[in-house]
Image (cartoon, rainbow, N blue to C red):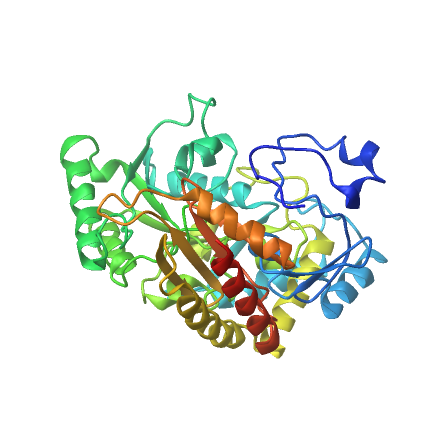
Length: 442
């Protein structure tokens, strides 16, 4: 049974044998489904009773290499028989040393020196690390974020987040010194015109500097190259280059939050590569270790080294088993051409979604880059009133046909498609067939 991600309800028969266990899961984990999964295989999840579901959620963009990829699973198993935990400030371990050497080579854009890497556990932790590093390096107190951005649920990360009140409501006061300006959403800010949306954003930034914030007090901009939880919104091509120009003018650091957009998701290894704008700090998580908890920030080595010993850290950051999984993840992405496959399958999926949605009442936009795609639902007219009811209905219809999807957007009005990067022509065709039937059923 598909569940409302906000309102919980009774368990269905597939979970009936497990009431004592499922009832013990706290309600704060708002659930999309009541499926009890026995195993995963590539793009598929298989339930305890053998039902197969095409998983186009990827655990919210985590299993880019697919569920239980044999090379990743083997690396995890082999490492777990040798060492499970070696704390970073006590010992070195080989997988960690190899990852510190290898991952910075993927840094998007040209730096005047080698990139460095700091490892932690979760996306929110990496966001905190990025903000702390920017403040320490610049000796400036303020950060500018963008409406619709999602950066995590810890207190500082919540202060940066504005994708939905459910993530930060009732937790005030949050970290001070954070300001927000509009993200250049072509549909909702620009009325369908990307350049107009960019002009709105840049003018809002100018107004912020004129009315509330001296730019030389700003440590960093933090931005998702494509909004994630905020609605899978693709900004105009000139956005990051324009932001880079403003940052350079005022000595502000540009932090690219690539937690959901990274690791090949958009058809480039990092989404900021589409723009040619080089960030100062890149935040990575989700797809980094194919499901094991690992995250990090990358920056010029001299910038990373601005953290003196003990200025930041964590007991589990850079766990040896997670690092082994991360190395295997890079091996699979490279050897199986998954970045190119994301681009290829994304083009097929986007074209098919647009065709399926043509003429469907309530579809305001179909957009995507690589395997990060969305259908947004809204009423017609200039106000574009969000239609979360239609988005939820599409999820239900797709679920009934054994396709798993998620919503996003401030009002839950967007259905997002996040297939594993290993997805095939056949699977994309099957998903499109289901979506077409599901849209017709609306």
